[in-house]
Structure formats: structure tokens, C-alpha cells
Length: 335
Image (cartoon, rainbow, N blue to C red):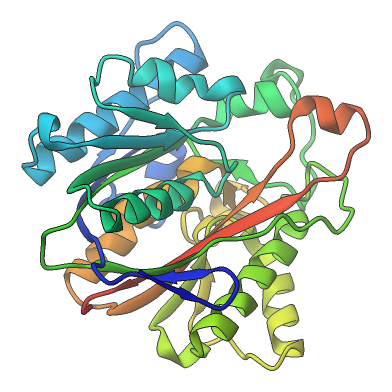
């Protein structure tokens, strides 16, 4: 393991992403990436009595699915890193309480999936053989917690994003033939004073910019090193801000850059305003769409930068600003 610059780690033994799985809700199933998801639900409740129980079930079944797809016995998985948006990460802890694998509940807001993959990669470099990473979100449970009860039918401003109902999970291993996580660039908390909880893209874009510039500086790479650079869920507004900030810094990322929150919905047909968000956004887009592109070698090198808004309902009610975070992983077909 080599430390590059201030915030990047390059792995001597890059972990292989053995397999991925994802389950999404009905709105995501109506979007442009529907054919890439492993399972699409017909309704948000999935037979449960509450939104929160439904999200826990999505997390549980997604993890069971990736274990089944990978062919890796659950008793060979040494650690599980999982998180979500709900208070005390209850979707993960309740959904996975029967998994019988050493468990780290993590919270990086919508950056949680890549945070988990980063931590799992470090553990594998440290000597373990296999780890599982997962993240979930649910439109209804998140809206109830962070904004307004759905029954109120509050008007959503153009800057708002639609929380993805879904989960993604991956299994990382010391052994395998790729795709490999070759390096990680961990993010710093960046707070530019944005207070509007309906404008997450603007709040998170500065953190994405900071991590992206740090990655280029630490590694000596430029945008053309990658076939694709993807942020987690900046949406349309945050994507434009990041593009402008990068251009002003001397990096033209237009030809390789897109955002998972932009990809997952058709904003015109589905009325999702600035796009998708939530832990399940990056997790399901990567586990469904991007992983398949890597396996088929349609993409050979990608930089995945998951972004998160480190706030909760209480901090917003107290007038606090919204700190942002962004973690990046470099995924390549070859070591």
C-alpha cells in the first residue's frame, strides 16, 4: 500500500470486485437504466407495513442476492460494511441482523457505498480475503425523515432531487480477475454555507470538486486517463457546478463526466427535477449499470466519486449549513 499525496492510497494488492447486485423501486424501474437492475419492485412497500421495514427488506434481499450471484459462501465473507440514510442506520442494522458476518455500520450520507468500498479495500490490503459492501435508500422513508410527510403533497422546487428507492451491494476479494479497485481518494468535509435542503447538488458539488482535484494532484492523472468519471448524486445542478469549477481549475471533464443521479431517471418524463439522490442512487447505478459495463470491457477505467450531504433534520431546523463529503475510488480492468 502506497500513500500518494495528501489523501490517496494506491494498493499493492488491488481488490477484485467479484460481483454486484441491486434491487430498485418502481420509479427507478420506469427509468432509462431499468434493464440493468437485477430486480425491479412493483411498489414501494414490498409487502411490509412501513416504509422503513420495506427499506430493510430491500437491503437484506440485495445482500442475499449478491452472495448468491458471487458464489462466495457467506461464512467466507469476513466483514460487512453497510449504511443508509435513516437515523442510526436502521435499514442496515435491522436488515442485516441475521447475516452473521462481522458488521460495520457506516454513514457518509449518499457517499456511503463508496466509503464502504474504500474501507473494505483497505481491510483486504491489510490481509483479509473477502468483504461485503452495501447501501440503501428509500424515497418515502427519507422524505418523511428529512423533509415533509408525503401526505402533505408539498411542492418540490426545481433544485430538488428524488431520493432513489433501491440498494446496491458488492463483494470484494483479494483473489480474482478484476475489475480492480486500484486506488482510493478519501474526501474532506467541505462546507460552503449552503442551507437549502432542497438544493443538495449545490451543497455537495464543492466537496466533489475538492476530491477530484486532490485525486488528480495526488496521482498525476488527468481526465483523459479515465473512460468515465461519475459522481454519486449531484444531479443536474450539481453536475453543472462541478463541470464549471473543474474548467476554471484547468480541467475539462465534459467528454468523460456524468452523474448517477442524472443517469437513473428521465427528468422530463418522470418529473424528478434535478435528478436522483440517496445512498441507493450511486449503489444501484454502479451495481447494475456501471459494473456490467466494466465486466463487458465497454469501460476499462472509471473514477467513481460518491457525494454526501452530512446533515440531518435537526441541523436544518436549527439553521445549520450543509457540509458536503465526497469519496473516490479508481476502478480498472487491469492492475
